Image 1 (cartoon, one colour):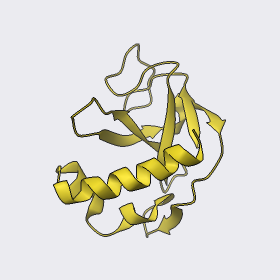
Image 2: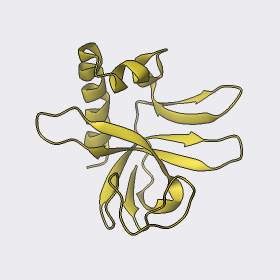
Image 3: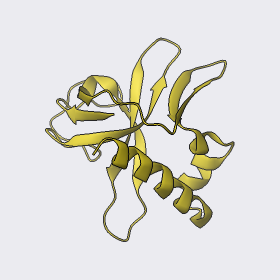
Length: 124
């Protein structure tokens, strides 16, 4: 799944002129989708990944984007808990994986890379 950034919104949903996470006009591969209890959707986006640095990934308001490709990657699986639901790489849904990844645990990087590469390869 790919999306194009068409507007920039802050955490309160107000339009802003710049963002350190997104660039207007940029196309992003979606790494997962989160649906809040109130129905609002967010896309997990790799916002930055400079050569030799740890990737920065986070959920961004779906209202910032236009969907370019609706292809669902083969490694995505639905998840649900009492507070929300979503879809994303099954390997990333293991308890504690995303927290460890955000803490730069080196054991998580090969898993991240493998799942990211599946997403990129299936919808170039």
